[in-house]
Image 1 (cartoon, rainbow, N blue to C red):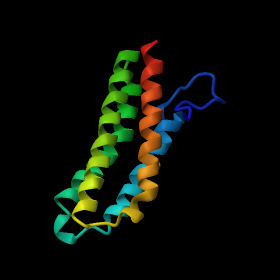
Image 2: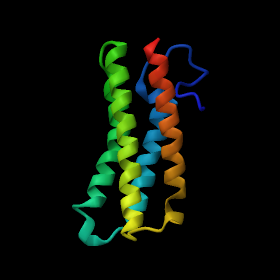
Image 3: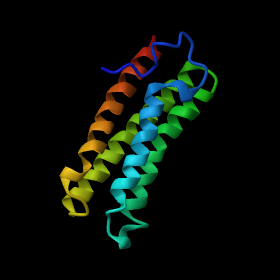
Length: 128
């Protein structure tokens, strides 16, 4: 499992230094790229829903890390992981409705899988 916190930094001072936040930001860009192919009449429907869920991932990591206390950070990480599942579900719906071909979301699916694992590991490490 990839380390959600960079090994070269003994103390993480900012959420921006977290490898998991950096991957989440890349995932947002990929999600926006993928949803450009969705039908125009879905702009306020599934397109907006998927994009909001994707943006929620790094936003919750940042918010949780910026609050005081490990419990708050752990909660933010948990919410971010829920948003990963939401994006995965939205993608499954988009594929079922033939808004996008499954082959066109391989990169996004791989990023979401890595994010889920990293967030799970980070959450577990914050329990200690």
